[in-house]
Image (cartoon, rainbow, N blue to C red; front, side, top):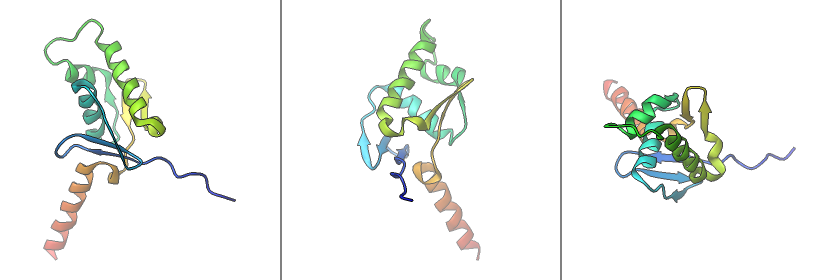
Length: 123
């Protein structure tokens, strides 16, 4: 039986300028609020980020009356930026979750490399 196409890869880089890559191609994510939402979701490393946490982070001084709707719009646009990997941005009952593997987030890779280096140094 022939295997289907490989699932799309996603990489989020937060060390340095924020970058999103889908299947190895850089994707422009315009706007500071949308970029902040992407960073928060990526840094949660697979955990759910609640709606309240996202709204508070995007509008720290005063949440506009349309804050939740604006958040939903930003998430919808993030899904569009993810293109074939849009299903990786999951809606949960109390928030959103971005499903990333350890090799798809630069911070997780850096943390793993540091742990390996420390373990090697102890030998």
